[in-house]
Amino acid sequence: MVVDGGETAQKFHVHDIPKGSPYKGVHKQIMIADLAKDNGYKWSPYKGLVNRETNELVSNDLDEVAKLLIGDNATAKDLGSVESIVRAMGPKGEEFLRQLEADPESPFVKKKIQPAESLADKHLRRIKELIQ
Image 1 (cartoon, helix red, strand yellow):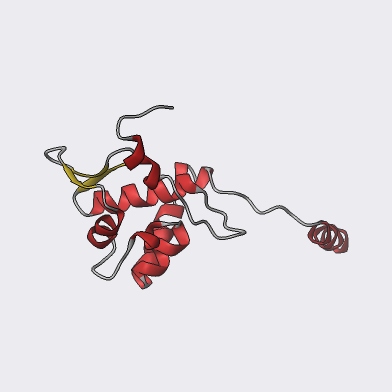
Image 2 (cartoon, rainbow, N blue to C red; image 1 turned 60 degrees about the vertical axis):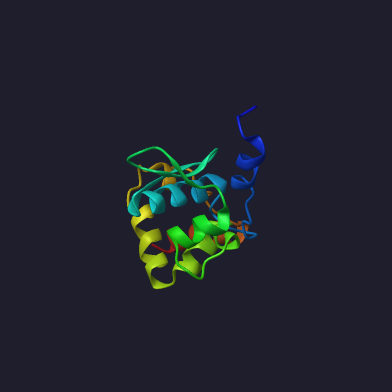
């Protein structure tokens, strides 16, 4: 897909997702969009942070976006994954994530990677069923 300002947009789609994470890049984008909304902005994954009322670009610099959405000590690296956003937000981050995961019908929850059940887990579950 070709977009205007592709060089700028490209950096918004670089992720630093930890191995084994149940979250994907789309979760990071949803989380950033919700943080932006809570702070009076809109998040465009192609333009950057936009003023909610005027639609004017506020910033497309990820370091500045991180400071505006997370706090003065935040950097672009803190926007790399759901886990890094939560960690950078501290205790508020855990609560924010719980709110995002509260609605089982939300896109955030529906797109989450479900852990695969191991063979050992299957056998243990079956044994418990047989015992009852």
